[in-house]
Structures are given as C-alpha cells and as structure tokens.
Image 1 (cartoon, rainbow, N blue to C red):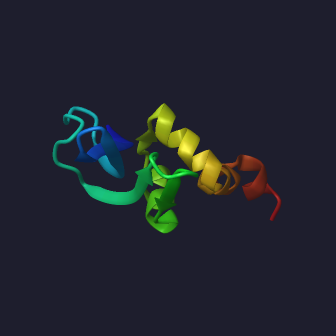
Image 2: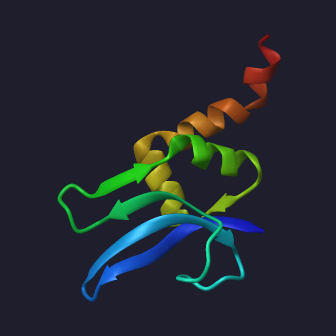
Length: 94
C-alpha cells in the first residue's frame, strides 16, 4: 500500500520535511515514488507547499495519507477538494 507521508531532511535541530509518496514498508527516509510537497515547521507561520494536482492524483489512486499529512492537507484546502470530488452525492447530481 502506498502512503503519503513526511520525509525528514535538513540539519540537526532544524528539521525540514518533504511530503512524499512511498510504499508503507519503506523506512522514513528511504526511497520514495514521488515528492509531492514541502513542509517547514521552523518558519513562522509554518510553510506548507503541495503540488495539488499530483497529491489529488495519488489520493484518487488509493494512497493513504498519514495523520500529520492529512492535517496539512486540510489546512491548505487540498483535502476538501479531494472529498468533494470523490463524494457520491456530487456524482449523482448530474
């Protein structure tokens, strides 16, 4: 199963994260299928960037986000786009 999760990069005591799509068996900083965003919690406010098109593609194909990534997706509004696109009520209102 594919997961959308954070991969830590950056210096000691100064974490920066990449949002990546990777198999769930891979280690945190192992190989990834694709980098779909960046997250920097050190800046004020925290910097969150996603390639929305690619994130939505992976969510539609069945990749599961971790709790932290899902929270970041909700903050940026990408999660709302995914849930409105995949809701059955939107498909039945043709």
